[in-house]
Image (cartoon, rainbow, N blue to C red; front, side, top):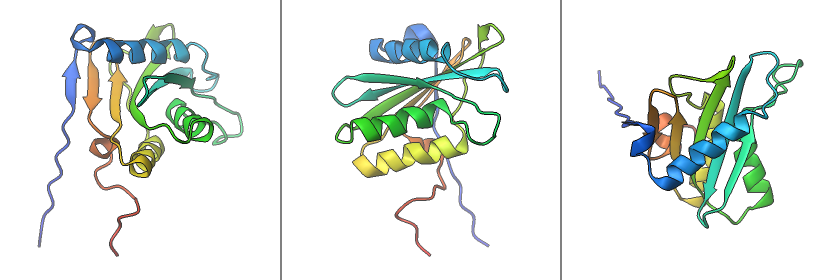
Length: 159
């Protein structure tokens, strides 16, 4: 028997320890969450992406009664970015959630499908995407989507 040990490094910050651009991305993600359409889960999620040229784009989750027709904030942001600005590399993504009148105390993390989409964007542009996950009590940061999805499905699969 062999064993594979996977190690993921997630840094934990307080908001005052974040850089100015990280704070700006978090602020944009928090603002975007306020416009989310989430009548079923009541979890309003916002995301903000940073392009390599410094431009920021934000999005939010959009739910639908015909589940799973809705889409997460992270995927909406990445898909729109790749459709509208196909030449720009995404270098960071922040995500924040608002629920029942407050931002979540603990960081919200991208779902598995969003992790895979983020990884695809990393692979496409050969650029890691820093993932910033906001919570009122702490902020998690990962250097790459690969850190959130170590056994990922991608072009370099060996069968």
